[in-house]
Length: 235
Image (cartoon, rainbow, N blue to C red; front, side):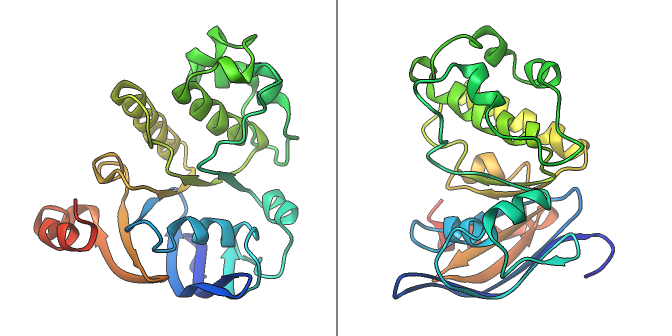
């Protein structure tokens, strides 16, 4: 790995039971960079995030995280190396308050944000800190899921469809938070269907098709490659 690389995925294959989902995924992410995995449903984008965290079945290839090979590691060990995964389903506990949900995961790294910092970044959560998980809106649940990861000390954020089904004002707020995290040198992998959300945030975009990387587009190439994107994604 080069000194600037935080994550390198090489020839990654992943399976659910007998189903072979990823067929040799290759990409890298530099420290402090935001990349987006774009593609149609079923292309293998979410499975890529799950495979990085060790949450799929059998997997092979190489996943280098901050200089460490993690392909054979259990998920809790990968988390301790600084990876945080925000699943599409968010994983909010309905019977716990907003603040209890936020405090639930342990701190795994020294750089975890303090609760006052998180409430400053997510003022909605401060207002709703005593509300049960079931009473939070979809946008509030998404903010809580992201805040919970930031408290653990993770420096690599794997974010799966965080804009899906949310009101435009909430999507805009999440975009502002991701831009702020980039300025703080977090490394971010976004899986998104919402191209318009991902495009301004991502330094590079990778097109995933049939469990492989079919193309790469840098931020400065967007205008010239919109036709290609429309063909690949139907945007």
